[in-house]
Length: 397
Image 1 (spheres, rainbow, N blue to C red):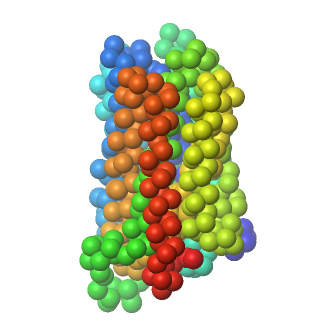
Image 2 (tube, one colour):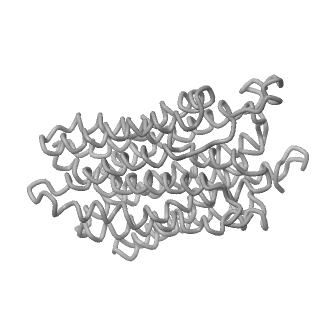
Image 3 (cartoon, rainbow, N blue to C red):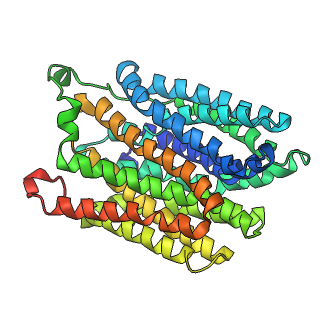
């Protein structure tokens, strides 16, 4: 599939992905640090970010079912309204020193993300089956823009209101969600379910989820994303603890987000050439590399290289798991199959992000990293288990 053959709406979905991830990287950079000034209980500083993932988790299944009924466009428009309201509450809460209102705003942004996570699946609907990995990759490429936009907006926003150095960044986030609403209004989608598919009875979710390939896809997506979120959430706190400047933290997060999405230019082709299971294995091994680097030192260089490795790890794991998942359900089953997957993924991401702040505060950076290793081991075990299954039970070898 060449760039010229991609439907224009896929480019718009990539732009929506870029805007969503720009705001996400902005919030990751600034949220925990601003909460250090909003609450005296330092173990709660990652709670708003965790509530963002919690809102995503709660919304993921209903959002998928709603879009299955109303269509993708209407769902994305509804989601963007939650983002606008949520970001506005963040601005207000910073000016008025209201920690719990800040948490509510973060939760509403999580609801927006609960709709936005389906940009990648929306792109799948627009291409042929063999081109699905590439379509997913092209949408995820939008995150490359976020690597530069999000952390820099957090940094630039500090000069907007010197007395409240984080408020400006959240004003930028509000503008981002308004832009998402505008871009979505130009999107065009194919019919959600063809007339032929409507006549076919869909299988129960239990039957879909019991497929070995579906099970492994969910495990790899769930644990891969959770590992990334867990280490990424704790990194700004660890860097602050070791007296690194905010500009250094923004720099590290920027490169992490870049590493998350830049490989998307090639991940689809790599999957087609080497097989999705092999790509997932490489992603898991890169996560081990990230942990190993974190355990060897706490300089800016250590944080930077570890998060770059973690970003590439997430790219291989998440795109690989998504590509694997799309081969396990029929067109009429996609709403519940995708919804259950993303509900499972972001349930664990929520737990992981909240645990990161608590473990960082109570046990320190070293134990945070050791805590990621069981996740990675389970990913590797599940992939090798699937590889031992007969080929007829596997989508990819």
